[in-house]
Length: 357
Image: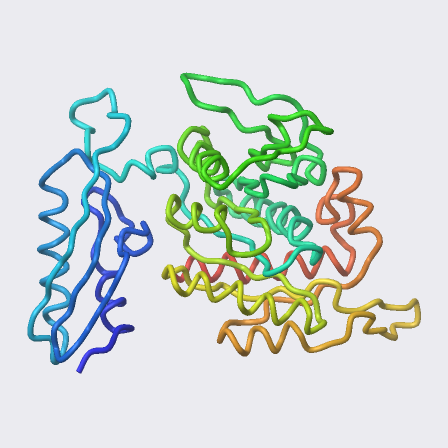
């Protein structure tokens, strides 16, 4: 008899009408229950077109009902109206409202960690710059960074991006540097102004970054998440159709154990893991010997526990820190360094994983 994994696979074959993406990657599937050959699928959808829920429900019944041992398929559909209707009548309801501003973004991936202080934003900036280099070499469109660390927005400093975003046709234009477009709360508040907000404000801001920023044509949008599994993380996975997540940890158990717990959130919301990056893995001396200042094995153990690849081990290199402090990531400032080469190899693996999906 078919299990939940097989049912999820079947659901991924169902495209949202008018799109090449499936209903799982759009985050529309909220629950899957199976008992004695009877299946219940819960779907939440925002649309003004009454025919779309009917088509999706019919496709679900057809795809899941064809699985071995499935006797009955019921679809529980929750439908809400979009807050803003498109100006073109022909386009109304033709896509999920939470994707209208993201329709030219091919892949969106999250960079996450269980705890702070592991270098997640540093990894995000260098990974984005490495991806940008690879895409430029392939003649493809660019990369963006959505900085969802609302309380501690450090991406503008690390990317060397400054200024106030402009409005164009009621859409925010992201700031660009090194070919990477970015949007961050750091552009919207003064440097010394604290962001003292409760959960609903955080969620609303992330929705605005997704829906009201003109990202243009992007191959990959890299989303820098704050540590943990709170409002920002949940709001993101409910707003954006994520293609996958990358988990950042350091070697010691204190970070690796929390990283594993944080990573399991993505499993709960059907976002696949692309792999684990171990940061601050070792300090290499001039003679080539290595000191494991933060222990060892945390990254590989985390990857093994999560059944996902270990994408790379980044060295402790003061030039990584200096590059981000000066707003010139090491991938840009010293592309021949060992650290930059590790970032490039990680980027290649991430890009290959996305292309294979």
